[in-house]
Length: 329
Image 1 (cartoon, rainbow, N blue to C red):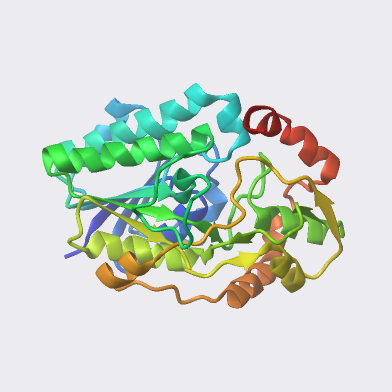
Image 2: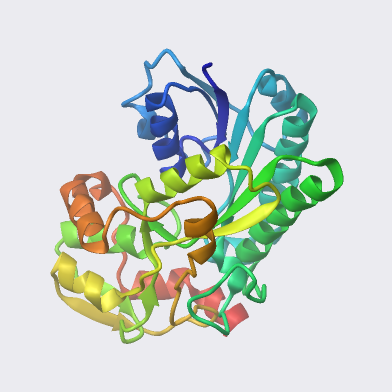
């Protein structure tokens, strides 16, 4: 039987990789995206696939959503507003999309009787953890509105399982990287910043001393985890998705090769992110396949994707993160 699936945010970074995988596995895929951050170009390689339909729709529009959920088995909810500084500037906008939008998607899915609902949550809900590696039972202490709204979305998904028996699972993603990660807009993830700087022949802007470490997880491994979650019987549960290995920003710079300038350490950011992946390895039989070195090599092979990305320097970053320091400092 061919599965009918929905991917909200399917034109985004992770979503487009998931769409590609689902189509390769023989599923029909309906992409729901308002293209505020997603790009149609991310789906260009599968655009003409017979199993793909693309809908330009906002997830907060519950009436438009419901008719798209007919005869759907699996739903993957990735659509969200990301980034720290804009969430500080526009908390109501983030709540509308990440919380109210999640509620609308969940209700559309519940009303249509889907078999699985996989929610993409964020490890930012842990804030600055007390323990490393960080397990799913660690204290929730979000540092900024983006992290809070993603956690509230997760709570809706899990509460609907508790009350209605809604077949949901939540995956808390750590530092995901790979081809098609965002190239424009707000100052954000380190890979996009560094690759644009490398193409422009500019120095890498390293925050603090560069010894902070991140649990970098390659996007195809994350997609594998999403598929495993949809196939599993572990309903109403939360799983960390990470490599279980933490690499420093200095290690990344060494692999990318280039000059460095150091910029001030930012408040509200942990010195370490490191997932305890014991649960997902045990219950979902998932483990990452792509090493950090292999992933960085793939990024370098696809570096032209970032040719039109903004090139940040110390001054533009200071301006872009001014409110970060003002509110979280």
